[in-house]
Each structure stands twice: as structure tokens, then as C-alpha cells.
Image (cartoon, rainbow, N blue to C red):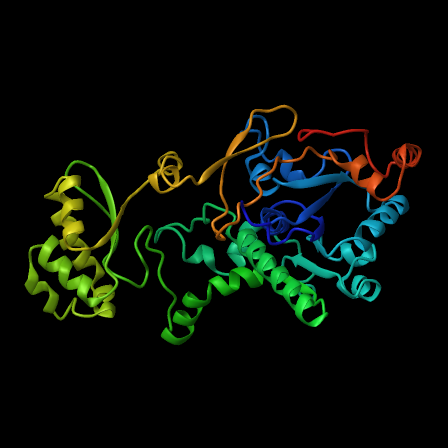
Length: 407
């Protein structure tokens, strides 16, 4: 029998939208937490409408919101805030990534909440922090990629290129998730429930540390070098005689000597002063890449891969996303499971969470429709049908029943 999920019994209330906060709370739900997602009446989380590619639902939304319960609530209305207050009182964790200043305006700052509920773990996710000269600014993923200098590192010498996934949002969601787990542990061991604060800028700034140190202490920043590595050589994509593209990496001196001996067939290059150390190979990258490219051009793809394998040189084919979907490291290890979708849509295949716990099967329940659980949640608060009808009449809840992902 599987062990109980680690966060069974923990209730998370989240005023969330887009990516960062939903990613954090979905991971809590994977571990068994009950996540109540508060959405705005009349359509819910705007990420529901980013696209319609997954059986009519948005790819972002279905990725980030499985295993949650959805209630529609107008938190700007007095009636909506009253319900929200009741939900907060029953929660262990409160998460929000509202616009700058919005949480404080409706009495949901960490200070106010923890004064009323000392055992509540609060988590605020912002763009640039809740203090300082940039606290009032909105921050979307690409804006933060620009502000942290990431775009100046990504692309070709001629053109900067955004990272192809929402890396700032994902970084912030991961730090919020780990911060909440740490706060829950602190509460369990000391009785103190610390407030968690994460910004997209700070999260991505941490990931920028290596190029930041390289720039501060080296005097110049790493260049944009496309699919090559800015500070390691040889490390990049090369094309074989038959058009096969292969990326390979040499990261230490034994690998360099093996590359020279086995793949290049030129063991004497290992001692060439231009290439004898890592920094030397980077300084003479163009000459070294020319030697490597010439060798690839003399080999078919299978021959090149066989020689790299013989030299124990790390390498990879340059996969498309379609290739990735059928990767044997996923398909042959049972890394896909079906997850239900709203509105009678067929189920989707979703990846199992990457952190496996022995004896624990992660929860991967359906993605909710907007407001799907409104009446159920209100009933748990002791609000009967007449009270629910009054709330709807006052515009606090939106239309009756599930509003649907496309509402």
C-alpha cells in the first residue's frame, strides 16, 4: 500500500493567477495539500485563456492547476471579503501573487494576516519585492529576463533571444514552494509560522549569479554564443556529414585528452598550448571549433556518436519538442499519467512530478473548471443554498455552477 501523501491535512488558500503562484501551489497539491484556488467571477484565472491547445484548454493552465479546488469570489466586494476571511481562518497556508499593493488594500498583507492568525504561513509572490523603489512595478516573465540581464546572455552575437520557457515565473514558483515547505517545518518544530516572500526578480537574480560573478571579477560579461557554452569549450552543436546535429561537451582535462585521442585522432593536440587548459580553449574557441567541425564533416552521424561514446564524451542529439515527448527516459520509466480536464474534455497526459518519494504516489487529480467547487466550499463554511443565492445576487460569486475554463 502507498504511504499517505506528506501534506495530507494541510489546507492552502491561494489568490493566484498566471504562472508563479499556481506552480508553487500545484506542487503542494501533488504532495497531498488541499489547495483552494480563488478565482475572479466571469472567467477566473486569465491563464485559462492563454491558448486552447489541450482539448480546448490552455496549456499553461492545465500544467499548473491540477488537483485543486476552484471557488469564484469577488474579493473587492464586502461580501466576497467576508467569505475570504472565513477561508483564511481555516487555512494553514495563504498564497497570493496579486498586483503590487493589491493585497494590502484589501487587508491581506502578511502583517495583517499573521496578527489575526499567528499559525498561518503566508507567501507573497511579487515582481520586484514588496519594498524598495521597484515595488510598485508590474513584472512579467520576459520583463524580468530583461532586467536581470538574462537576455544579454541568450541568443547569437547578432541578436538577443528570450529563454523559450517562463523561466522567471518558474524560478519564483520553485522558491515559493520550497519556502512554504520550510515555513511549515518551522511551524511544526517551533510553533512559529514565518512569512515567505519571493519576487520574480530575486529568484532569477539567484540563477544569474555565475555570469554576475564572472562579469564583476573578470571585467567582461560572457558573450552570446548561440548553442555553444560561453565559458567552456568545446561545448556546442556540430553537424556531421549526413546533416545529423550533435551537441557534445568537454568539461575537464581527462575528457579533453580522450576527445583528442579517440574522436579527433590527434592526441598531440592535448598538449597544444592554445588548448591545454579550459580558459585557453575558450580563448582560442574559433580555432578549436574549426578543428572539431572538420572532423564532424568527415563522419556520418552514427560514426561520430560511436566515437564520442568510445571516448566517454557526453553528447546529445538536438531534439525537437515532439522528440522529447517520446523520449525513452520518459516513456520507458512510466513518467506519464493521465489527468482529467473540465467540461467533459478528454484526459491529457501529464508528467509525474520530478521529485520522487519512496512509497508515495503523487496526487494528479483533475484540473478544475472555474468556480467548480464554489458551492461545496461554501457549504463547508456552513452557508446554505439561500445564503449562496444571496451572495450570487450581490455579485460576490459569479454565475451558478462551474463557469468553465473558457468563460
